[in-house]
Image (cartoon, rainbow, N blue to C red; front, side, top):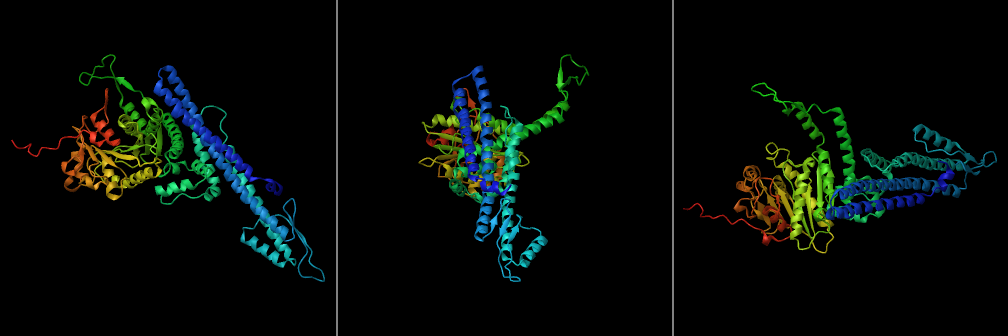
Length: 607
């Protein structure tokens, strides 16, 4: 870049353009939310049939378009701000050099050369003449730097050394501007979308690449923004976010969606926006990898004739699945495990409006390890009642569908009992759950490793709630999830009003009074045929292996009309089971209406 171009450049014009792209991003985001949470939700709640299905299908594609525009325009805005920041820095250096040169009596030419006046002590009766120094850059090589210093010291005119310094500074500024232009030009060109109306998996892969490129190129600009807290405290996170301008929030969110989405203490709407971008990028990557797997592993023949093992006959029309196909199908399911989990989250998004189900918020998401996901039904920041559910052993991103559905059922049941107050139910898969009932579940480290993150999440809900009064919060935990909640209470503060345990193998403590909630607010369900409590007590019970199902533990023993370890959220054709309704009553603060088991009869053994 030459001197005239840098002098004429106005970084503010690029900042204004960035503002325009940011406004476009925000408008696209609002349009997406309107389509998902009002238009599509209204159709699901009121209409059915082929026309409604077709309309929802088209609206879903339109929502994808708006989300893509929202994300890419935010990146363009950040890139333009980064470019303006770099060019403004170069221009300030140039202007400072020009001002200093002028004050020293030097003249700067159009090509950046510096003309210096005569000066210094007379030599042979003459004052050393002035001259011109060509534009250059500050030497970085030690030898070149030493030669320049030597030339300056040897020159009889002291203005020569000044001119050399000005020429170096001018050259440095021009080089910095040229480097910035060279760096940013391909990044901005890469942000040009394909000329079509289809947002493909490849497009979202490109978004991830664009994000990485803008983040790397804009390091100087991004480092100039207020940095997030080092220790990830929810209150500190909230204060940091509130202290940013709208522009700074947009820029940080656009290049660090994974970090923003994981920050406890930030508003649910912000985390949801960030995590949906991460979800779409991860889904695109997983889909392309799965498609590649299918190409590499073609489906073998599925069926073969049935051979009677006793007679060796092959009855006509009878066939069985081949072992090769069974092995292939098992490998296929494993190859798309994370994809199934992401599809389940999208499925929940697409259920908004069904029977009045509120919008969903993705409060956490990651594909690392077995995966993480935190999904809320309704905005917890504005809800009067919150329920946070911790699932147990074998829970992971790939099978999160069932855990999401459990909290959908709790939302419906609680909504019916809430007397018009708002309810938000949350599936919290924010820890690495044991993978196997027999191999991993007996170990306690999964619970203690996950407990700090759980407590921090609850503290974040306290921080972000916007209502006039504190929400009523219930923690619902199942199986090994109850062990995590017990570990969380034992090692920190569980910010909850009620605890509901279902199928608990033990919570590491021996008494309800040790669980960090008011007396009488620990509830327990153990259904007929659930063998986990009695088996698990030997690993996770408290003193004398006491678990919440034992009378001496002191929990309110709720009646159950379901069977087995996984039926606590079952529904009937007439509505929720008593097991589910009891949980819902606790969620909305109606503990007095909960159906309890009669206390054990101490004389039952006497005849």
